[in-house]
Image (cartoon, rainbow, N blue to C red; front, side, top):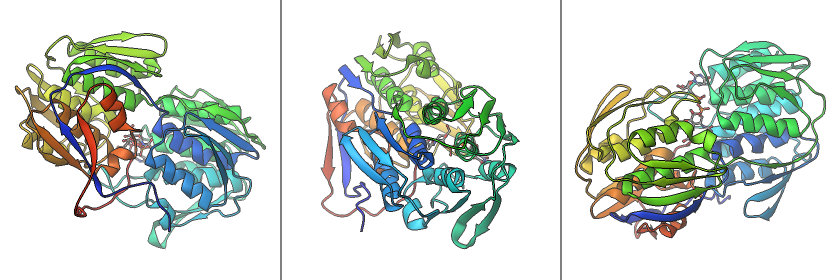
Length: 440
Ligand code: EPU
């Protein structure tokens, strides 16, 4: 039986009110890591990956690869050598995929590797509905694969030879762009992905594949061109810093007050977050690979609309909502990516926030303060928002379901304590009852 790296028996306890001062080091990007790790299946050699974040989503992806037959050597806490030449199977059962949404990247990677993939869809649903993969499947079919849905939501894709093609994405999708890149990188001829996602992790994946010998141009723009190659070798690669982890600490400092230097970031990736925090009244000072955030007093209202990159990231929406819940004035947040990403609002309202949600819009009337309360993490970013709420609230906040937070934030307790937060990870005396879903 595996230890999947998650602990269901813990909670965070926060005594709010401390301002934050000091320095935080940002880890490697979760959403890059969960795409790049399956991409190692395409290499006929050893990939040495640095700046891998120590989070449970990565632990799970490494265990999936290992179970499939890959040889994985840990060099240090953030560096791994991965050799997938020993992988023989192209079937990945639900027992392996159920823990991690991004396990569907194994479809593109296996299809690209051996023209065949049978992968069970990860279970669960986030943000209020089933997360569709129609654009992923449309891309595989355009490359010449036959896609069938088998019993128990197993996606079976098979091709004699994948052939490059033009693929227009009907929605801007990070997942579909990644999956089609993985499948197309060794297809014969030219693949053009139009209306592609432009997130920093798309560029990171392209850079990684190019380091292995791929020929991918245009990543980071709407049009990605992939000229298929027949052979990809191993390589050394360092994953980019996590823009959402950095943004979460920025939001925390803006909300609590204080002065923190956030190190190991790419300031360009954080532009939309910096712009909104500046608009709300915080000082944001950029350097080459760090950002200093200095609070100048109470935040002011500001309006936010989440959009695909370079728009304001949906994965920062809950954290900013918390910061604005105690701002001066009324802010409006419009969610432009997911249908239902305001589930966490109920918990903030219980803490004293004044927020009204109507469909994909939340109207936040700033209040004087929040009150500490027992809350739970509904998903990864909702959990991050609960931490910030606990940090600014008067009194004690206890957060359950922290397995979601551990999926995407490395050493969050240690990092926050180092800048002055009063937060502890404690073990439940009785086992809590809550469902476990996939995240990310
Ligand atoms: N969509 C479709 N059809 C598809 C794919 C997506 O209609 O085939 C829709 C979705 O329903 C959604 C929109 O397109 O409304 C965007 O979805 P996208 O595919 O871009 O999301 P994703 O790839 O499933 C990644 C991140 C999420 C992040 C979104 C948006 C990873 C592993 N996950 O998800 O990150 O919210 O992009 O930026 O990269 C998180 O880190 O907490 C997280 C949820």
